[in-house]
Length: 434
Image (cartoon, rainbow, N blue to C red; front, side):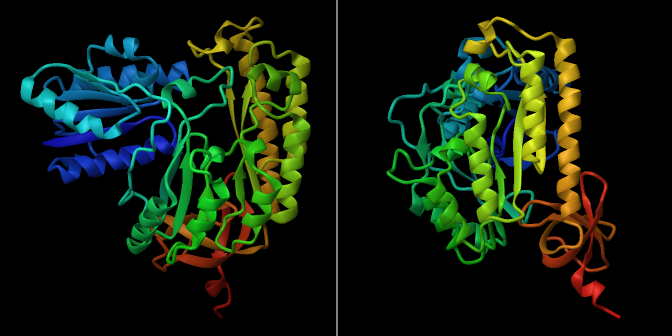
């Protein structure tokens, strides 16, 4: 039977879909990238926002409408966080959660045999262990995402993820080593360590994130090690110093900001203020000259006044992010922020988003301009018709034209002009050729 996966949400979800794909393939299913001819459709859901829930419902309804004879399964964060709501989605023949991922396969097999609807959501429990999982292959043959942590206990006032993902739990180092060795043997040159709250890695094992980073950098065949999104205040000065001693470590840090206003951060129940955030950025830039600092910024959080927004806007400009993902706050039922007074109007959210995107775009352009003239190693990931795109170690996107087969290759490249998003480049070997 043919199964097709749809993944919504973060890199962790993408990694887990890869695990599920392997599991189904090993059990004799034909895993297809195309929905055409599929007998089973699986939606791996995200529930960070109510919009994500809406996309999940739309996907399920579309699949059932376009493929009425197929079995449709819902899994992931949405049913884990809201099991009663998920159970009401009649288009889903099978429903499982984000915990016990491997339970999806037997649930689908049961539904296929009995013809009955199956709902099997395993609740999170205190002290639960990290679910063993090792990825074997990705569509991108140059970079592998490796999940090393799950769960969160930060309880930001706008976020449902602690409910959806449960307590913090971490991948043991020996399991991580085994997975990375296998990925290196399959030709992956870059490993991206990801987690739901990556900065909390190891708390349950008596370890820290730096321990996983140092192990990953020690694996032969892995040329680069990169980190996913980080909670800034959990990154210590000792961590930064130890990372700076690792030649394979990529100097790109995605430090989730959310707001550049202390009053807003307090209402969000974030665990740092602007001064601490700035100190961490300064420390990173001192240890990693030329590093990229990227972030997420929310506008229109409940109670955000024009003055508070102006403070956040100025802070984003002052930090000079290499890239910032800007998004407007949306009400997430089940969170404290949903009932906070001072909900900002859609019109003001839209206007503030536009202003913040413009400010972030200006700092993005300035960062890319600073790369002009540098000669950096670029790992080329995609290519078509002689045009290849890849990334430097600090995650600067570079595009080159070359007759050489570059996909999966690392080449010294001279960086040129940019269009505000991608830099043009010339291979150094071609630049030096008479």
